[in-house]
Image (tube, rainbow, N blue to C red; front, side):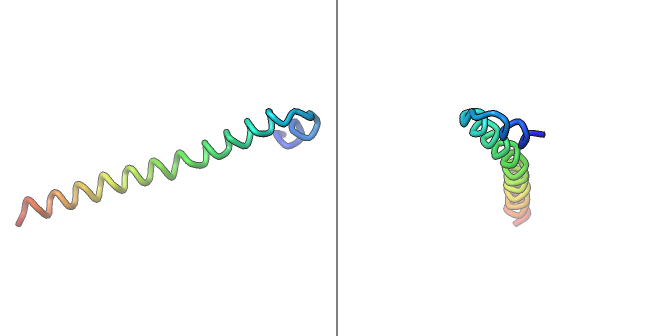
Length: 52
């Protein structure tokens, strides 16, 4: 559907906006996984320091 809309219109700004939106939506899950992984790593490292 998006492809048909972009092909029918000659607006390059619209195509660039759609591409930026797709990249943004793809990046969010990776960023969230990285943040959660870092928090888990920090929690494990802190618990190891407390037991020694």
